[in-house]
Amino acid sequence: MKRNVFLTLFVAAIALLSCEDDENGPFEDYLVARPLTISKTEFRENSVTVVDPLPINESGKMYAYKDYIFVNDKYKGVHVIDNSNPENPQKVSFIKIAGNVDISIKDDYLYADSLTDLVVLDISDVNNVTIVDWLEGVLGDGGFWLAAEFQNIAWPQADIYDYDGIDFDEDVIVGWEVKTERRPVQDVRTDIFFDGALTNESSGDNTTGQGGSLARFKIVDEYLYVVDSHNLNVFNIADLESPEVLDDVFVGFDIETIFNRGEHLFLGSMRGMYIYDISSPATPTPVSEFEHGTACDPVVVDGDYAYVTLRGGNFCGATESGLYIVDISTIEKPELEVIYPMDEPYGLGIKDDKLFICDGSSGLKVYDKSQAPNIEQLNHFEDIVTFDVIPLEEQLLMVGDGILYQYEYLDSDIRLISTLSLN
Image (cartoon, rainbow, N blue to C red; front, side):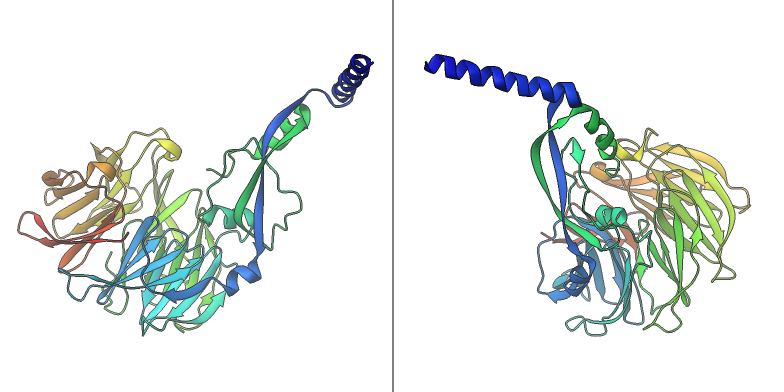
């Protein structure tokens, strides 16, 4: 009797599965990822605080201002370091700024991105930082996708990314929930469209700080320029406490960095270098561009030459890595002069006749550029991981792999004077 009951149930189950396949096609198990979110209002209420020094999670860009060094912790905020004695720098505090990747400072006012918002902080007392203004949605597209991309939330391995029920204007991702679900194959092929789609200089003004070559923020006189993936965002900061939002300028795609020399901005992108005239600072206008194969691309400029590092591989593209030296003596017609091979270059900087290149895990490389476009290697600091440099008047700052390095300039070289672990 039992055998007959079990047989009946088995046949019924097979019939149900057959019915499933008949009506909806074949079914398979898939990993489905759903974002966990909070509202933007809640996000902003808890996004900026000052706490005691913390270990760095992922060192990002640097910024030097007066006797302080600010080191970005990707998407979390900035570490504040007292550098009044470069041979013995001291950690001061950590400014939590959710979704932050870059800053710029003038006259004790710090401008920072928090996802797509611009935050203005008074840092005249670094131990008592206060918010003086908050401009919502003025950077980037202001949408859910950009907010998700800028957070320190790793995209999980999944077959399907399910965004049903998400408010694309008001939600911010704080994590993911991944579950195995059985779905019709024909439906999943439509959903899977989303899979992987999102994995994808000194100003001469003592009151303005200095960022590295990987900076997306740049203050020039009374204007703040910020690049996102395809726009140049312009702000009038004559009133430092209350920036005026001006019209942004569409400049292309995959914009990564910004550098200023005189009346020109040099924008580095994964596709090339774009030059803009800011003689009318509120309305930057295009001058020329230098195109190259797809690669990650910061740029610095000195004299008649622009120095561009291209990093190929991974999401940066297929272009081989190298240092491109571009003749910009005729600014309307930049021309490539020479390419020097590199391994995995990131940031670079210039001080007088010295050119410094952070070549990733291949270390810090120092060149004599006095005969540019021909350059000669002076030194190679190996066995360190390098990310970006800031050449100050008295010393060179370099950050990489959670360590802040400082060097003093020598006649034909540099010498290490201190290191500070940020972990």
